[in-house]
Length: 321
Image: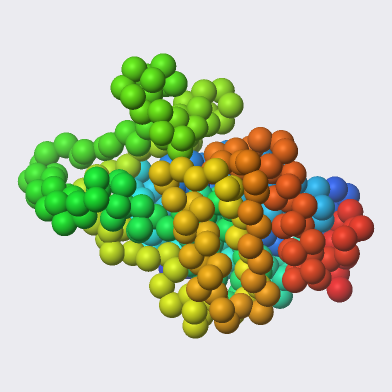
């Protein structure tokens, strides 16, 4: 695994990334490459690299897991901005860098993403045709979530509050940085925050299970206006032409991955190969890192990505084809 920072010609800050390499890696060969997109409020060291990225690398893919702009070790200010348009653009910037690497086959690039990252990966594939296959793992359409649960189903009220707060900040006031989760499982229980997704997210991000320094689970409130009008799946009927797969758990939670996954699968009628994988008895956060549901997801993902990125199922490393 390599830790890198890069900046393409049209970027104003660095992107930090981990490059995971196959066994017996040979820099003189070219490999199919996966861009791995972390969840909302997460970072590259969590599920995007240490779970799915590591598994794909073991099967012969080069995997690039990176921190989104404004988050983790990547640049951009103010910190903790969640900007869907920038998150999608980050994917293109990572591809721009990847295709300069001699061991990356520019014609065999795929993308995967988890949670909000799944929504971003699917959204990027609509217009980024260098992506030849895409997998949304328990994908969430963050725009829909902000319009509904994250704004208490009052998006216009949220926009008014964001406008007022941004005015205060422009006049010298402090940034309002919202913590997205309870501080601990005990805190969640004390405050009645035991809805499945909220409680399981707290277990994932606020305990040693998945806690990492870059996984801040914080967001600048005043810079989230455009999220409310963003739709990860806009025009999917026309523009999702690549092979696409959606992996969702059947145990439904408030963040809406089951609903969003079903929606984008249903709308992607132009896809050359669309597949829906439902994991019975598993929830959104189970699919992040629990061994059994992850194995079930990979059981379907690996043949799909190998087929569409032209790698033998039995290969330990990707040969130049």
